[in-house]
Length: 357
Ligand code: PEP
Ligand code: MN
Image (tube, rainbow, N blue to C red):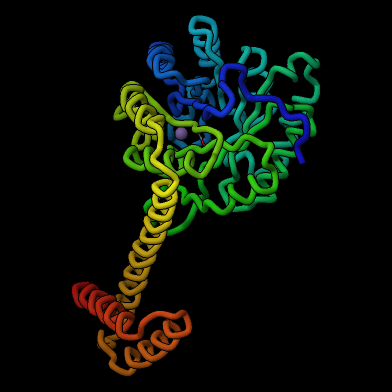
């Protein structure tokens, strides 16, 4: 689908993961340059910082805007390191290209909007050949789990003549309780990789996890699954960050994570075991999320019962539920007694919650 692609950067040795890191947002000249200097020491290939920030609600920090481009240009000049920022429309793209930004990323909210992506593509198509050839663009997955929309955005950018092209997996938004800020739904990026093996696929564990402690396991999982690189949010004072504070880590922490990730892995058996263990971890995560959702629904039911003076425990309903579940479990090859025990515990907890409302 994407022929004649060129590497995103010149400074990444073949077979090494592409590492992009930097703050969610360029908040001040000092913070930007300080983060870049520290991150350069960790061996990253490209420095990222948001200039224009899409925020979910008005009133949030929307980025410094145009003036922050000069700080990225300064990082590029003084540290001789490629720099990246997010563009959400043709105006952003033009200003970023004029400032000498090496890599543009299209954010998840923009990828979901074909009008905006086409507008950016139409601008890129007007660039002179040498600028077009030097410019790299990476396209984040859309917020919704839609592989066609993601591929379509990549095709629009490719159609504009961009050959330094890549995709970023940043997880997909979901409603209800979740451990991840944006659940990874790994099968979607894998399907993209299966269809387009030539396209570099970079994982963004910061926006998937939304939490500092999830960055390392997600990054490890992505690399073990043969993704081509990482984009990670790092800030010198993460607790004070004006956006995405909970998921930003210091350059020092990032250096430690990178050194653990770079350690040569175990033998093939270990690697196979690790992958299977990660599948188990993911499944357990889903079970916990579903249990949390079940308890929420049980409480909603509890409130209705209370309102209408219906007793909390109705033995008939429970017997019917149990019979149906046990039959379903049998169809799925699960042991009947094991499922009865689990269901009894879940039911007991639901009743306890309804009684304590
Ligand atoms: C970001 O990388 O800072 C960002 C806004 O990402 P996303 O588009 O994935 O939410
Ligand atoms: Mn962010």
